[in-house]
Image (cartoon, rainbow, N blue to C red; front, side, top):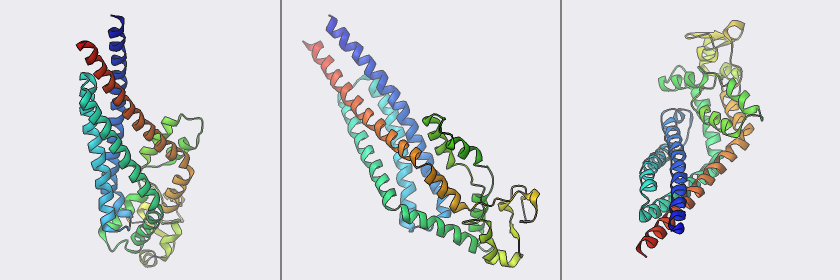
Length: 279
């Protein structure tokens, strides 16, 4: 009698752990979906990548995120009911997702210099076509203005902060505009067609915090000029937080391995319990 009760206790614990894992897994799917949508809606404006690559990346990331959301939702039901065949299928799909994310990571690492140069080229093109191309003009104003990232960089720079909090702020960074000006710094505007046409010390309104339209001047202290370039700001942010990015990737990998292991162990325990009932 004690053995079946022990088996039931193990099953209950495994089901609870797998359910909690699925909640965490669902959250990672949501993050991937949001990142994919952000790349599709926002980031493509600032990248001069090949059209096939630039359109395939957000679709793949968003599709993967949506699939994870659906799979984790269905898996919650499987973990509660304890259906062994479905749990094995779930573990297999988790492994496939893990391999897909690994391929995405390797793809990103392989094309990291392409993305770097594409971002730089996209910003440079935005400066050249500012005032001539409506979409490019809006994109440059969008990336240069609005919400400040000072509080993000200050939090991430504090090593006393918990790692999970640093990861949350790292994810939030992609939804926050940069408050920057130019590619490397604000002086880049002086040699553009827009800068030459508007005269010396004149910048687009998005380069200054308190200017909402027209132009702002580098001589006006009250305008609060954004002096750091957008390319340099993003590059510095990524380089300074490689540790956080690496640990985030490692954490996601561990979560996947844990989920695969839990699914297989629970399926085995369910089969074992069913066998003991038949004896």
